[in-house]
Amino acid sequence: MKNLFTVKKKSGKKISMITCYDYTSARLLEKAGVDTVLVGDSLGMTMLGYDSTLEVTMEDMIHHARAVKRGLKNVLTVVDLPFMSYQNDVAAAVNNAGRLVKEGKANIVKLEGGEEFADVIKAITRASIPVCAHIGLTPQSINAFGGFVVQGRDIESARKIVRDALAVEKAGAVMVVLEGIPTRLAEIITKLLKIPTIGIGAGNVTDGQVLVMQDLLGLNIDFKPKFVKHFMNGADIFVTAFKDYISEIETLSFPGAEHEFALNDEIYQTLKKEYL
Ligand code: KIV
Image (cartoon, rainbow, N blue to C red; front, side, top):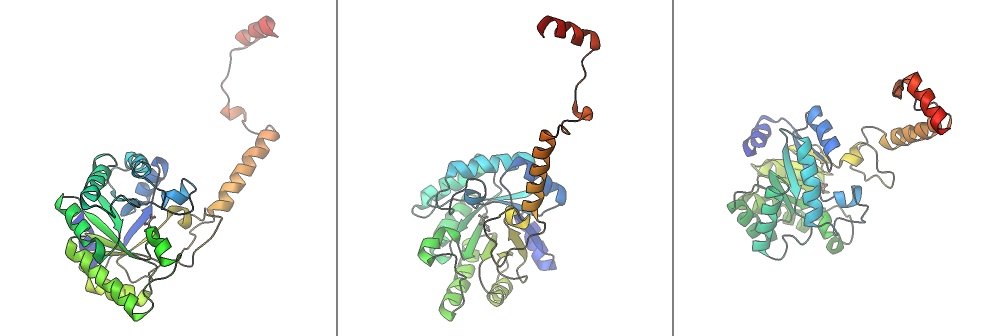
C-alpha cells in the first residue's frame, strides 16, 4: 500500500482521495475507482452538525470507519485520529491508533501536526501502523490559528511548514496532507519529499488531491471555501428530488401501479365484507 502511492509519485500519476463516512457512499467511491478514502474527522461537521472537528470522539471515528470499511473491498482507507486522542501522551496515541486499526479497520491513521509530533509518528510507526501526517492549516488547531487562515505566507511560517514536512517524513510518515498553503510552498515541499503529498487548498502541484465528499458534490449549502470545486450541484438535485417526492405523494402519483403488490380479488372481497 505504501509502495502503490510512492510508485504513483515517482511516475507522476496523481493520487485521488475523497472523504467518506458511510457504507453507501463507500460503495460508490470504490465503483468510481478512487485511489484512497479518508474517514476524516470532518465527519463532525458533515455528519454530526458540529461547528468544528474538536468535539469528535474516538467512538465517532470508529463507528463511521467501520461503516465505510463494510462498503469497501479493496480501497486503502485512512482514518483520522480525533482531537486529544494523540496530543498529550505518546502511549495513548499508540493505543488509539491501534483501536482505529483493530476496531475501525484503518489501513493508515492520520494525525495533524509536524515536527512537534515526530515522536508520536515514530511510536505509531514502530507499532507497525502506517501514519499519514497533516500539516499547514490543521483544523484541530483553529483556536491557536485564530480561525481558518491560510498558513505559510510569510517566510518564517513557510520555513516552519517545510521543517514540519521534513520532520514527518523522517519520523516515518507514509504520506502527508498539505492543507491551506500557497501553491508555490506546496511545490517546494512536494519536490523535497520522497513520500507523496496530498493537497487540499494547496494547488495542483501536490502528488494527489483530497476533497470533502459533501463539498465535491455541492451538498454543503452553508458555505464554499475558495479551494472547493462543486463537481455537481448536489444540494439542488437533492432538494428537487425531495420536492418531487412530496408533490407526488400529494397528487397520488406515487406510489404508482408498478410499485404495488397485488391481492387476489376473492380475498379482497371477503376481507371487505368482513371488515368494512
Ligand atoms: O477531516 C478531513 O476531512 C480532513 C481533510 C480535509 C484532509 O482532514
